[in-house]
Length: 201
Figure 1: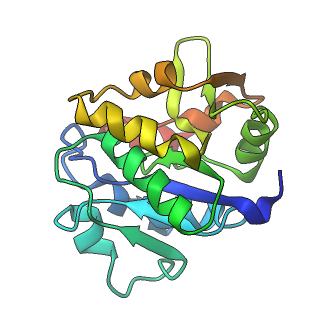
Figure 2: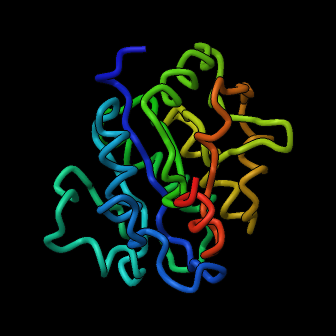
């Protein structure tokens, strides 16, 4: 896979109810979590698209002048509360409009993402696959994967039926499941205790 043809899509439109504050703006080693993630994935992917409603805390808090956000392209026409499946469908369409065939997809609460993670997922994507997502011993991770932008229409149709489950995307697409060499890359931060645990270790 030519890395010049790979974009990135970061979903940042969540309400962060369990965290109690916007996860995208949480500090992580001197920078916000969103800035860290977009900085890392920009080493392999271009453009870096961040999907968040225009009224979301992530967009309102980080879209203006903010160190590290220069490489971000915002996709802000997602409907508030529509859920990650709708954000994924809209983001894939935006990436296709930007001329990309494949995008790496992750959420804004995954501070340990790495270039190696992207490379392993790309190696798991065959020409026939619509997506390659990470799996561990517990579950599949549809928000840690690479997707072909041609899947945007299929996912948009799912959203129109009222579907909101991310696993519905996995079922609707030809998807390969990839076991990563380092499962810590999949660590996500949902609550303050998760963030504290990561910082301690």
